[in-house]
Image (cartoon, rainbow, N blue to C red; front, side, top):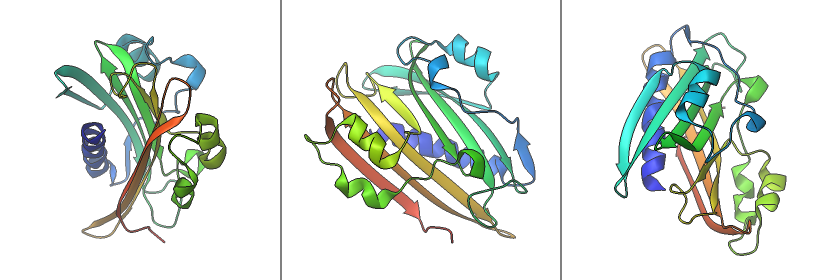
Length: 202
């Protein structure tokens, strides 16, 4: 999972650098779950829904080539999660052989923010907790990954992602946290990875 996380983080930083002044990007809504299907939806399907992407990358993992596209919209005057935070939403889609195998939505807008309570992560237990337990505890995931981004076929990875940034005269202070929870074909939790960078913005 480390490679996926680093690629996603790099794209977020790139988008943030682009979007921290005024209003940037074209506004969009989070894709409804019933309109896309991991393992079935194609690159062309996503482009038809979202339009041309702002950012696109290609990378290699385990001798497999993946395509990643991203969309962003931000406004320094938007209603954000906390005072002086730049209201930003970002949607990322990952494809293998032009088939959707992962997506993630990150927002610091009040209306669709993806903040989650990281203090509850310790309540999730490998081999005991289920996918439904995780959702009941933390709410709707911000995204999902499937094989070959999960370790095994039939498994899926629940993503919980949040990022917020506050712009000062010449600097940007940011906080980011991400939680990856892999569940096997029966829905039982098998892996838990949590990470965060920066300090929470008060």
